[in-house]
Length: 402
Image 1 (cartoon, helix red, strand yellow):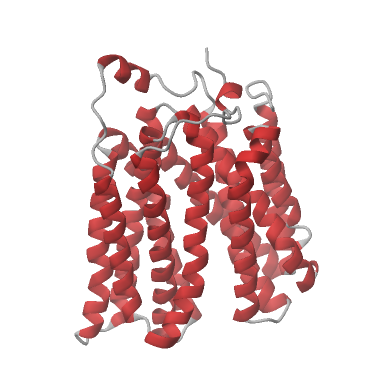
Image 2 (tube, rainbow, N blue to C red):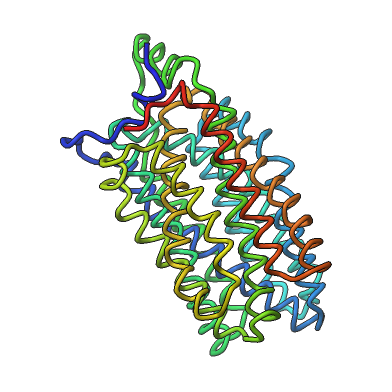
């Protein structure tokens, strides 16, 4: 019987060659991440300049977060019932049309405000379908022996896209305005669709292969607890993004330039983690690496608010550790879940992470408003340390740290 320990073992020294799907999924991920990041930056600037209100930007982010939180699980179920590649193709093509509608509306003289909100909501809705389908597609198409390495490369592609989107978006908005960027985002969705189309349909399985796919994964794997560990890492990232803004602007009295440096340093830490993950996990084991990374990043929350110089020094290692945790837990989840349930699992994990992030954001904001932002960091760090440690401890009999 396969155990969780076997599922979390380091990748063997000799790997099978990359297949067509693996070669195409990574550029599609990078392109989509870059386009989505630029779209959100441009939409936020457009909403702020037309509404002249920070609250207007806040409503934009709320609209973007609602569909994934409420519909990811349902879309994950759909991803397990229908062809994942087809669902991703549909999501990309419809997203391209939605992204292109806003600049056309602006160029024809329409009021951009309401349409910007509607476009952001539509793209978020389609992303909620794309996310579980694309992760299930990884489970379906990537060779199990290459899961850990691919998970690291996947995280690097996604983070590079987000990192570049902030810099590229800001520069292009300054020189050409927001409207061309919305058109550019539509093009990125089309490019992602081309990559998915080139992936071709999955080869037909024999009856034996179908049975092995249905029985794939780890028998009796505690997927709920493994998913909760992944959700804790997602919560740490999402809530930190909010609290870091308050820390830089309010506590340290700095502006967008400093926050941009902090964001760039965090992106650098993520990318280094993704690049080094195969070696680190081969040395210490995937589960141990993931848990240590999650707890280590949470502990850094007690250091980040001490001083601006400390923040700049501590952000890269903090992002490095949460990057290790995120890559490791995705890899373990991909190995543990049967292919027929992969969409539901990643849909549920995404919904849980977003819901937990929303609850923690409210709690952290309440503490920060009543006291100081540093105490908000302390609450976030304490919660993530305790939650990660407790779940990992409950799995001590299921996973052997290698």
